[in-house]
Length: 351
Image 1: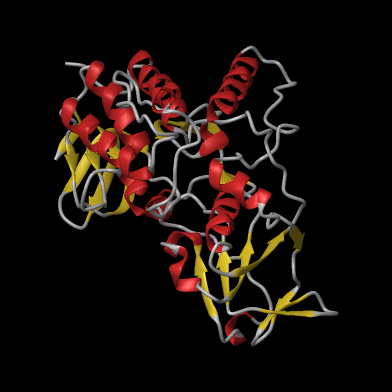
Image 2: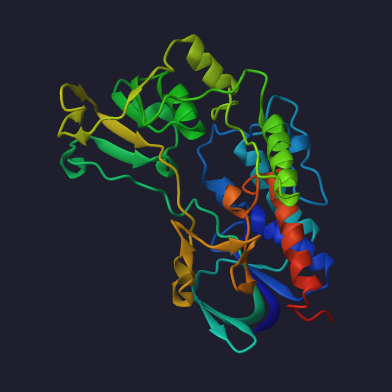
Protein backbone atom coordinates (compact mmCIF):
# COMPACT_ATOMS: atom_id res chain seq x y z
CA UNK A 1 0.00 0.00 0.00
CA UNK A 2 1.37 3.42 -0.97
CA UNK A 3 0.56 6.43 1.22
CA UNK A 4 2.02 9.84 1.99
CA UNK A 5 2.70 9.09 5.66
CA UNK A 6 2.79 6.00 7.88
CA UNK A 7 2.27 6.67 11.58
CA UNK A 8 3.61 3.86 13.75
CA UNK A 9 1.71 3.74 17.02
CA UNK A 10 -1.97 4.35 17.74
CA UNK A 11 -1.79 5.87 21.21
CA UNK A 12 -2.18 9.53 22.10
CA UNK A 13 0.82 10.66 20.02
CA UNK A 14 -0.28 8.70 16.95
CA UNK A 15 -3.82 10.08 17.19
CA UNK A 16 -2.57 13.65 17.54
CA UNK A 17 -0.43 13.15 14.45
CA UNK A 18 -3.44 11.71 12.63
CA UNK A 19 -5.54 14.74 13.52
CA UNK A 20 -3.08 17.14 11.89
CA UNK A 21 -2.40 14.85 8.94
CA UNK A 22 -6.13 14.74 8.24
CA UNK A 23 -6.36 18.53 8.44
CA UNK A 24 -3.44 18.81 6.02
CA UNK A 25 -5.25 16.62 3.49
CA UNK A 26 -2.56 13.94 3.44
CA UNK A 27 -3.07 10.26 2.68
CA UNK A 28 -1.93 8.32 5.74
CA UNK A 29 -2.42 5.25 7.91
CA UNK A 30 -1.88 4.70 11.62
CA UNK A 31 -0.50 1.24 12.50
CA UNK A 32 -1.25 0.10 16.03
CA UNK A 33 -0.12 -3.15 17.61
CA UNK A 34 -2.87 -3.07 20.23
CA UNK A 35 -6.07 -5.08 19.81
CA UNK A 36 -8.28 -2.20 20.97
CA UNK A 37 -8.07 1.61 20.97
CA UNK A 38 -6.62 3.41 23.97
CA UNK A 39 -2.87 3.08 23.60
CA UNK A 40 -0.86 2.17 26.67
CA UNK A 41 -3.53 3.66 28.94
CA UNK A 42 -5.50 0.42 28.67
CA UNK A 43 -2.57 -1.47 30.20
CA UNK A 44 -2.00 0.70 33.30
CA UNK A 45 -2.96 -0.45 36.78
CA UNK A 46 -6.64 0.25 37.57
CA UNK A 47 -6.08 2.88 40.26
CA UNK A 48 -3.87 5.13 38.11
CA UNK A 49 -5.25 8.66 37.68
CA UNK A 50 -4.17 11.67 35.66
CA UNK A 51 -2.31 14.50 37.39
CA UNK A 52 -4.66 17.13 35.94
CA UNK A 53 -8.40 17.75 35.50
CA UNK A 54 -10.08 16.43 32.35
CA UNK A 55 -10.33 19.90 30.85
CA UNK A 56 -6.54 20.19 31.00
CA UNK A 57 -5.90 16.75 29.47
CA UNK A 58 -6.94 16.99 25.86
CA UNK A 59 -5.74 16.12 22.41
CA UNK A 60 -6.05 18.74 19.64
CA UNK A 61 -9.50 19.63 18.41
CA UNK A 62 -11.73 18.03 21.01
CA UNK A 63 -11.69 18.30 24.84
CA UNK A 64 -11.84 15.30 27.11
CA UNK A 65 -15.32 14.87 28.64
CA UNK A 66 -15.53 16.13 32.25
CA UNK A 67 -14.77 13.93 35.23
CA UNK A 68 -16.47 15.38 38.26
CA UNK A 69 -14.78 13.48 41.09
CA UNK A 70 -11.09 14.38 41.29
CA UNK A 71 -8.70 13.67 38.44
CA UNK A 72 -9.82 11.19 35.75
CA UNK A 73 -8.76 7.53 36.00
CA UNK A 74 -6.95 5.72 33.21
CA UNK A 75 -10.21 4.09 32.11
CA UNK A 76 -11.68 7.53 31.36
CA UNK A 77 -8.66 8.31 29.17
CA UNK A 78 -9.16 5.05 27.27
CA UNK A 79 -12.79 5.95 26.62
CA UNK A 80 -11.72 9.38 25.41
CA UNK A 81 -9.07 8.05 23.04
CA UNK A 82 -11.51 5.51 21.63
CA UNK A 83 -14.12 8.22 21.02
CA UNK A 84 -11.48 10.61 19.61
CA UNK A 85 -10.33 8.06 17.06
CA UNK A 86 -13.92 7.46 16.00
CA UNK A 87 -14.91 11.14 15.92
CA UNK A 88 -12.15 12.06 13.47
CA UNK A 89 -12.46 8.81 11.52
CA UNK A 90 -8.74 8.20 11.75
CA UNK A 91 -7.49 5.33 9.58
CA UNK A 92 -6.08 3.15 12.35
CA UNK A 93 -5.18 -0.42 11.34
CA UNK A 94 -4.99 -2.91 14.23
CA UNK A 95 -3.65 -5.16 15.41
CA UNK A 96 -0.63 -4.58 13.17
CA UNK A 97 2.89 -5.26 14.37
CA UNK A 98 5.57 -3.31 12.54
CA UNK A 99 8.59 -5.53 12.06
CA UNK A 100 11.05 -3.25 10.26
CA UNK A 101 11.48 0.02 8.37
CA UNK A 102 13.79 0.31 5.36
CA UNK A 103 14.85 3.17 3.11
CA UNK A 104 13.61 2.93 -0.46
CA UNK A 105 13.63 5.34 -3.36
CA UNK A 106 11.39 8.26 -2.46
CA UNK A 107 10.85 7.29 1.16
CA UNK A 108 10.46 4.24 3.36
CA UNK A 109 9.12 0.71 3.25
CA UNK A 110 7.34 -0.41 6.39
CA UNK A 111 7.15 -4.20 6.77
CA UNK A 112 4.51 -5.55 9.14
CA UNK A 113 3.16 -8.95 10.11
CA UNK A 114 0.59 -8.40 7.35
CA UNK A 115 0.72 -5.77 4.62
CA UNK A 116 3.73 -3.81 3.35
CA UNK A 117 3.44 -0.01 3.28
CA UNK A 118 5.51 2.44 1.23
CA UNK A 119 5.46 6.09 2.30
CA UNK A 120 7.28 9.34 1.69
CA UNK A 121 7.43 9.94 5.45
CA UNK A 122 7.20 7.96 8.68
CA UNK A 123 6.08 9.33 12.03
CA UNK A 124 7.28 7.10 14.85
CA UNK A 125 4.97 7.27 17.88
CA UNK A 126 5.48 3.90 19.55
CA UNK A 127 5.97 5.22 23.08
CA UNK A 128 7.87 3.33 25.75
CA UNK A 129 5.42 1.10 27.64
CA UNK A 130 6.39 -2.03 25.73
CA UNK A 131 10.04 -1.61 26.77
CA UNK A 132 10.22 -1.58 30.57
CA UNK A 133 13.71 -1.01 31.90
CA UNK A 134 15.13 -3.51 34.36
CA UNK A 135 18.43 -2.50 35.98
CA UNK A 136 21.00 -5.18 36.66
CA UNK A 137 22.10 -6.01 40.19
CA UNK A 138 24.25 -8.86 41.47
CA UNK A 139 22.15 -11.72 42.73
CA UNK A 140 18.93 -10.92 40.86
CA UNK A 141 18.63 -14.49 39.64
CA UNK A 142 19.10 -15.91 43.13
CA UNK A 143 16.19 -14.03 44.71
CA UNK A 144 13.54 -16.53 45.81
CA UNK A 145 10.73 -14.01 46.08
CA UNK A 146 8.63 -12.37 43.37
CA UNK A 147 10.05 -9.67 41.07
CA UNK A 148 7.91 -7.60 38.74
CA UNK A 149 8.08 -4.34 36.85
CA UNK A 150 5.50 -1.59 37.23
CA UNK A 151 4.11 -2.72 33.86
CA UNK A 152 2.97 -5.96 35.52
CA UNK A 153 1.46 -4.34 38.62
CA UNK A 154 -2.31 -4.63 38.95
CA UNK A 155 -3.63 -4.34 42.50
CA UNK A 156 -1.97 -4.52 45.93
CA UNK A 157 -3.88 -7.67 46.87
CA UNK A 158 -1.09 -9.93 45.64
CA UNK A 159 1.19 -8.49 48.34
CA UNK A 160 -1.16 -8.75 51.32
CA UNK A 161 0.81 -9.52 54.48
CA UNK A 162 4.16 -9.49 52.65
CA UNK A 163 7.32 -7.41 52.96
CA UNK A 164 7.79 -5.58 49.66
CA UNK A 165 10.62 -3.48 48.25
CA UNK A 166 9.60 -0.64 45.90
CA UNK A 167 12.47 0.55 43.70
CA UNK A 168 12.42 3.94 41.96
CA UNK A 169 12.10 7.62 42.80
CA UNK A 170 9.33 8.78 40.46
CA UNK A 171 5.56 9.00 40.37
CA UNK A 172 4.96 5.33 39.58
CA UNK A 173 6.99 4.23 42.60
CA UNK A 174 5.26 6.68 44.92
CA UNK A 175 1.77 5.71 43.75
CA UNK A 176 2.39 1.96 43.86
CA UNK A 177 4.02 2.26 47.27
CA UNK A 178 1.02 4.26 48.51
CA UNK A 179 -1.28 1.38 47.51
CA UNK A 180 0.86 -1.56 48.51
CA UNK A 181 1.63 -0.06 51.92
CA UNK A 182 -2.07 -0.34 52.84
CA UNK A 183 -1.82 -4.15 52.83
CA UNK A 184 1.90 -4.88 53.24
CA UNK A 185 5.08 -3.65 54.88
CA UNK A 186 7.01 -1.60 52.32
CA UNK A 187 10.62 -0.50 51.97
CA UNK A 188 11.32 2.25 49.41
CA UNK A 189 14.69 2.27 47.66
CA UNK A 190 15.83 5.22 45.52
CA UNK A 191 19.10 6.25 43.91
CA UNK A 192 18.57 9.82 45.09
CA UNK A 193 16.38 11.49 47.66
CA UNK A 194 12.83 11.75 46.23
CA UNK A 195 11.65 15.24 45.43
CA UNK A 196 8.01 16.05 46.11
CA UNK A 197 5.99 18.78 44.48
CA UNK A 198 4.09 21.17 46.73
CA UNK A 199 0.61 19.91 47.54
CA UNK A 200 -1.04 22.55 45.35
CA UNK A 201 1.02 21.75 42.24
CA UNK A 202 -0.39 19.35 39.65
CA UNK A 203 -0.08 18.65 35.95
CA UNK A 204 -1.39 22.10 35.02
CA UNK A 205 1.59 23.79 36.61
CA UNK A 206 4.01 21.27 35.12
CA UNK A 207 2.61 21.93 31.65
CA UNK A 208 2.99 25.68 32.15
CA UNK A 209 6.62 25.14 33.12
CA UNK A 210 7.16 22.96 30.04
CA UNK A 211 5.48 25.58 27.84
CA UNK A 212 7.82 28.27 29.19
CA UNK A 213 10.73 25.97 28.43
CA UNK A 214 9.47 25.39 24.87
CA UNK A 215 9.21 29.14 24.27
CA UNK A 216 12.71 29.64 25.67
CA UNK A 217 14.12 26.97 23.38
CA UNK A 218 12.36 28.48 20.37
CA UNK A 219 13.83 31.90 21.14
CA UNK A 220 17.33 30.50 21.59
CA UNK A 221 17.44 31.16 25.32
CA UNK A 222 20.12 28.94 26.81
CA UNK A 223 18.58 29.16 30.29
CA UNK A 224 15.57 26.98 29.62
CA UNK A 225 14.62 26.29 33.22
CA UNK A 226 12.57 23.16 33.77
CA UNK A 227 10.87 21.49 36.68
CA UNK A 228 14.03 21.23 38.79
CA UNK A 229 13.29 22.89 42.13
CA UNK A 230 9.61 21.98 41.94
CA UNK A 231 10.35 18.32 42.38
CA UNK A 232 9.36 15.14 40.64
CA UNK A 233 6.48 13.49 42.49
CA UNK A 234 2.97 14.88 42.19
CA UNK A 235 1.11 14.73 45.48
CA UNK A 236 -2.06 13.06 44.29
CA UNK A 237 -4.49 12.08 47.09
CA UNK A 238 -3.19 8.49 47.64
CA UNK A 239 0.40 9.78 47.92
CA UNK A 240 -0.66 12.49 50.38
CA UNK A 241 -2.45 9.86 52.42
CA UNK A 242 0.66 7.65 52.39
CA UNK A 243 2.72 10.61 53.59
CA UNK A 244 0.26 11.16 56.42
CA UNK A 245 0.69 7.49 57.40
CA UNK A 246 4.44 8.02 57.52
CA UNK A 247 5.43 5.50 54.84
CA UNK A 248 7.04 7.83 52.28
CA UNK A 249 10.53 7.41 53.68
CA UNK A 250 13.11 6.37 51.08
CA UNK A 251 16.35 4.65 51.85
CA UNK A 252 19.51 4.53 49.68
CA UNK A 253 19.72 1.92 46.94
CA UNK A 254 20.98 -1.50 47.83
CA UNK A 255 24.08 -2.82 46.10
CA UNK A 256 23.08 -6.45 45.61
CA UNK A 257 20.22 -8.90 45.90
CA UNK A 258 20.32 -12.04 48.01
CA UNK A 259 18.13 -15.13 48.00
CA UNK A 260 15.96 -13.59 50.71
CA UNK A 261 16.21 -9.84 50.16
CA UNK A 262 18.60 -7.00 49.39
CA UNK A 263 21.84 -5.78 50.90
CA UNK A 264 24.01 -2.68 51.01
CA UNK A 265 27.04 -4.79 51.88
CA UNK A 266 26.62 -4.44 55.63
CA UNK A 267 23.01 -5.30 56.38
CA UNK A 268 20.33 -7.43 54.68
CA UNK A 269 16.70 -6.37 54.36
CA UNK A 270 14.53 -9.44 53.99
CA UNK A 271 11.87 -9.13 51.27
CA UNK A 272 9.12 -11.28 49.84
CA UNK A 273 8.83 -9.25 46.62
CA UNK A 274 10.49 -6.44 44.65
CA UNK A 275 8.58 -4.05 42.40
CA UNK A 276 10.85 -2.31 39.88
CA UNK A 277 9.48 1.17 39.08
CA UNK A 278 12.55 1.96 37.04
CA UNK A 279 11.18 3.52 33.90
CA UNK A 280 11.15 2.66 30.24
CA UNK A 281 13.08 2.96 27.01
CA UNK A 282 11.70 4.02 23.60
CA UNK A 283 10.34 1.12 21.53
CA UNK A 284 12.49 1.49 18.42
CA UNK A 285 13.68 -2.00 17.48
CA UNK A 286 11.83 -1.86 14.16
CA UNK A 287 14.11 1.02 13.11
CA UNK A 288 17.34 -0.98 13.42
CA UNK A 289 17.68 -1.55 9.64
CA UNK A 290 18.08 2.24 9.22
CA UNK A 291 21.26 2.39 11.38
CA UNK A 292 20.32 5.78 12.75
CA UNK A 293 23.00 8.00 14.28
CA UNK A 294 22.86 8.19 18.06
CA UNK A 295 24.13 10.80 20.48
CA UNK A 296 24.68 9.13 23.81
CA UNK A 297 21.72 6.85 24.47
CA UNK A 298 19.24 8.48 22.07
CA UNK A 299 18.93 8.97 18.33
CA UNK A 300 20.08 12.40 17.22
CA UNK A 301 17.15 14.65 16.31
CA UNK A 302 16.75 18.12 14.85
CA UNK A 303 13.46 19.33 16.24
CA UNK A 304 11.29 16.21 15.77
CA UNK A 305 13.00 14.60 12.80
CA UNK A 306 16.05 12.40 12.62
CA UNK A 307 19.14 14.37 11.76
CA UNK A 308 19.67 14.40 7.99
CA UNK A 309 16.34 12.55 7.53
CA UNK A 310 13.52 15.14 7.57
CA UNK A 311 11.00 12.48 6.51
CA UNK A 312 11.47 10.38 9.66
CA UNK A 313 9.89 11.99 12.70
CA UNK A 314 9.48 11.07 16.38
CA UNK A 315 6.56 12.06 18.60
CA UNK A 316 5.60 11.59 22.21
CA UNK A 317 8.79 10.50 23.98
CA UNK A 318 9.11 13.30 26.52
CA UNK A 319 11.70 16.07 26.48
CA UNK A 320 13.72 14.21 23.86
CA UNK A 321 10.98 15.05 21.34
CA UNK A 322 9.73 18.28 22.91
CA UNK A 323 8.79 19.64 26.34
CA UNK A 324 5.73 17.81 27.72
CA UNK A 325 5.43 15.78 24.51
CA UNK A 326 4.63 12.62 26.49
CA UNK A 327 1.48 14.23 27.93
CA UNK A 328 -2.01 14.35 26.47
CA UNK A 329 -2.10 18.12 26.28
CA UNK A 330 1.54 18.52 25.27
CA UNK A 331 1.77 16.05 22.40
CA UNK A 332 -0.52 18.14 20.18
CA UNK A 333 2.01 20.94 20.05
CA UNK A 334 4.79 18.73 18.71
CA UNK A 335 2.43 16.84 16.39
CA UNK A 336 1.28 20.10 14.81
CA UNK A 337 4.86 21.26 14.34
CA UNK A 338 5.89 17.93 12.81
CA UNK A 339 3.08 17.85 10.25
CA UNK A 340 3.53 21.52 9.41
CA UNK A 341 7.20 20.84 8.75
CA UNK A 342 6.38 18.01 6.36
CA UNK A 343 3.93 20.16 4.43
CA UNK A 344 6.06 23.31 4.42
CA UNK A 345 9.11 21.53 3.11
CA UNK A 346 7.10 19.66 0.50
CA UNK A 347 8.29 16.32 1.82
CA UNK A 348 4.97 14.73 0.97
CA UNK A 349 2.59 15.34 -1.90
CA UNK A 350 -0.68 17.12 -1.20
CA UNK A 351 -3.50 16.26 -3.51
